[in-house]
Amino acid sequence: MTISERLWHKHYPPEISTTMEYEKRPLHEFLEESAALYGEKKALYFMGKELTYREVNKQTRLLASYLQEIGLTKGDRVAIMLPNTPQSVIAYYAVLMAGGVVVQTNPLYMERELEYQVKDSGAKMIICLDAFYPKAVYVKGRTSLHHIIVTGIKDYLPFPKNKIYPFIQRKSAKVLVKAEQSTDTHLWNRILETSSGQVTPVDIDPEEDLALLQYTGGTTGFPKGVMLTHYNLVVNTQMSLNWLYKSEKGQETVLAILPFFHVYGMTSVMNLSIMMSSRIILMPKFEAEDVLKVIEKQRPTLFPGAPTIYIALLNHPRLKKYDLSSIEACLSGSAPLPVEVQERFEEITGGKLVEGYGLTETSPVTHSNFIWGRRVSGSIGVPWPDTDAKIIKLEENEEADIGSIGEIAVKGPQVMKGYWNKPEETAQVLSEDGWFRTGDMGYMNEEGYFFIVDRKKDMIIAGGYNIYPREVEEVLYEHEAVQEAVVVGVPDPYRGETVKAFIVKKQGSGITEDELNEYCRKKMAAYKVPRIYEFRDDLPKTAVGKILRRSLVEEEKRKLEDSEAVQ
Image 1: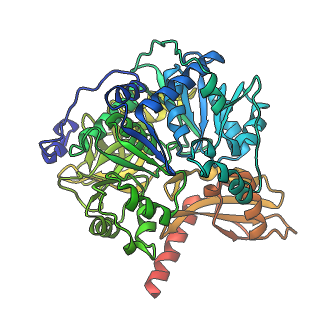
Image 2: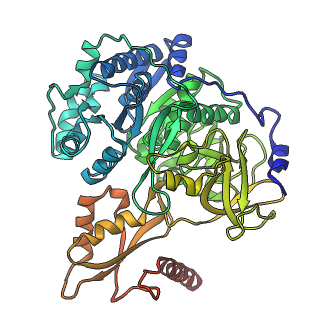
Image 3: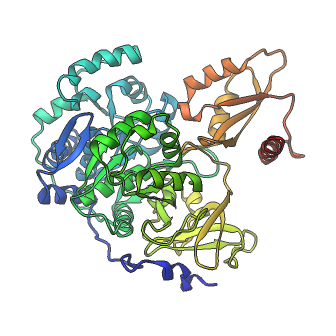
């Protein structure tokens, strides 16, 4: 089989184009277009507060103007450290409108993680919640940061929630941060009150100029900044629109649980919704019952998510109490979607739930099953419009036969420019003719459907989060009681995988699991912290002393198989 045959095209419904004409426009122009066409339509819903498209666009222009006034120039990087709130949408498009490059930053990051990302990206500004302000101040003294823009959840809460929230925040977080306006600290509400709103136009080449540095880990080492252009993101969003051909512009309501600081949530929820002039229901964190209540009351039609989200909802004890019938389509990503979860969710909602596949390096989606067409259980589906994919034999570096397992490679207009300031690592995965090697092992069947069988990378995917073993190991090795450490992913019925650490203690050390856990929680975001610790006298190694991580993974698999056999 040669890639030119594109076996998957024969399965495309007539409503989906196999090739498209994509708009070569800066991404933020789609917000301005929606504001022009649907100015009075509700754009954002947040805990009872609603903003129209005209209001969102106005506030975006006010922030963009202010960013330019305090020194933002074309190509400058701006870190955004926000959960799903109105500010996260406004900040994202304002940075792009001002000519900057967004650096999405996980709000769960600890100081050391934030410091690394700011240093690597060279970000000059950060926009964050007041709760994260101390972290930003700490990092500012060690990096290129010049300005901190501070906002709070209460800034977009309706009365009386906006008055009550600070007391709730102080009680739950046991801290109340108060930032004050200065030459390098800027308060969100003050910006909206004082900015002129006069944005100096920036000449942007959509195909060349970056819109986003999205950090990902790859095979080893610290996270790398994936360079995505305006065109990359516009293309993948317009591909999504093509796939969702039954959806109507200006008519949909989208549930935004997937975090916008993750490329999947950013494209499949935020950018897609803005391009479709949809109403976005913003949820800053996932709580199953809260989600069920919101679905019943706000009636979303589109619900992009991850398997862990759907599993949690299906297993909620009061699930049957709620009406979820408004949901028409869900695209699941970030981890394999169990067939039983798909079938049960569709039965309860009456909508469609299908699995897709993608990577940060591909903006992110490359494959999906058809929402209203033929789908194959256990498959990630077929390549999207204008996207090619093939299986590469690892040894011979050539295309594999149908049904043969190899590394999945993809090519298309959504593929990144490369890794930020890392040309050698870029060359390892991205060929001169545009083929990106995903690091995922899989095969294609005779009908052109693709299947994932394993990861070439050691990366752990737990609850939709990418976790890189070496980064966790670095933290463990910093502890004075740890002699050796290796981290692996082990199967978990809820998270897909969970993090397990094998530890060899230094002689005479009495370190306990609880003590190590407390230590790690101070050093890393909670989702990276090992959930299981196993202390050993030694670890399996090669003749030259390299720890055999794969051996431990296989050992865990055998334990699971043995326990299932006993049951």
